[in-house]
Image (cartoon, rainbow over all chains, first blue to last red; front, top):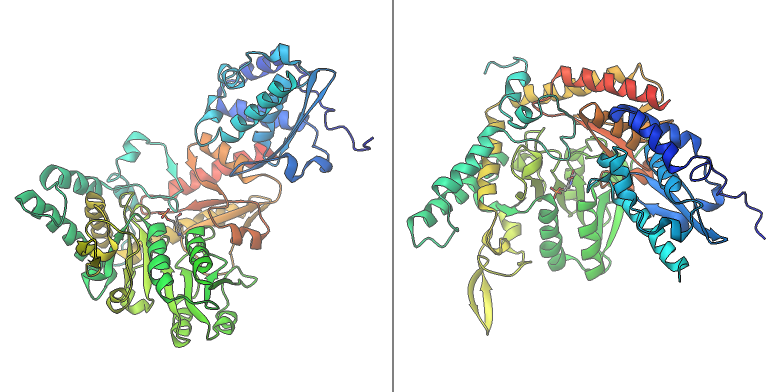
Length: 149
Length: 407
Ligand SMILES: Cc1ncc(COP(=O)(O)O)c(C=O)c1O
């Protein structure tokens, strides 16, 4: 039994689903409103408990640090994440919205990058900016593939 | 140009075509790379149109025109640096390759187990890692030159490190991360007196200070073309002729040999010994044009202009909360590095980019310096000839809005 607080106690992917987030992002017109919304989403994502902010969960990026926790319960993917950058943390909130609490079957064929493009966030996917996010989406898909076996 | 006239930055901006394509760009990332004036673009294009051929193989007229252009560039660069001889100028890909050349050639020939290389905590990774690699190969050790509380090197503390084992001091002309200017003259003098060689990383010095390698007294000076209004892909290692004469080659290939046979190969004299393969010919011509372009301006007025922009920026920062200027209490070049109490530099830069303000965030390839500062990263604004007071004011306004938004 671990006595740590659960890192999965957050609203993204459960209370807030893809449609709800898509609506908020589409309503945010222009880069400034979108950036502000990402900062707002970061505020709505509780801090990852310290116990998980370790090397095991760290995803190194050049300009900011992020942590990603992946687990599985009752056939569902559980995700938690955090970053010292609020914009990155806002993007991580989107990542959680897309994947947290879903079954591998529900996620089959889901393309996170494509979803960000439809949300008007393609500027976060450029070669210089998108590496960390892409790496995390890949880690999640690798975990899904492992669960499905 | 009359002395003491203000530097004509607004007019000079017109010489940089990038601002025609990006008229609203507020480019404060000059320490990463500068933009290129028409004089440089024209020189490269003119070379390709009128003289393009490979160098030093002139059995035809273009070949000799190309060699003349390339060797002419070497002479002009030597003149700019006040080098005693043009053959003291070795073309490289940039600062990084220049330092790797010094480390591999001079270092492997001269370093023995137990020898010490001193590199300051201010250094860019390019002036640390090549020395660590050569230390691994030779049994030498690399030791840090520490910083005082002001973020600069204390010459007395440095003097105490100059034991008999010290063979080389690797020192930046200007910190790329904080702009801090270490006390070069006393440090070079002390190192020389202790019998050590000195390599100055001039990547951030060359565009701002007038560099006179003979007056400086160091043994090596390295810089990149692209940080001094010149092309990417070319840089220079300057070293004294006597030193180069005894340095072995480090890369093998064409151009650098005297005679090759399978019984043994003899090598060309410097600088060719260190320029294996086809060099960056058009880029060398472009770099010479960049230095000529700089020399056509009143350099003290240019530096005063850049420093005034930095000071105007820093004065404006005083009205914003939660910002610390790194190295504020010591001599600095036209660079302002910031640490924030409550926000992440990456977030600030994301908003600034939206407002058209280009800055750099992160550790700027200066990991040891950021460890010393106790920071994961910082935000850097760096100023150049074409920046104006309006750029600074717009950057300050964008920064104020950004901090409000992130509050
Ligand atoms: C102080 C310093 N040294 C070395 C370098 C490396 O220069 P380059 O990448 O052009 O080889 C840089 C560039 O960022 C620098 O600022």
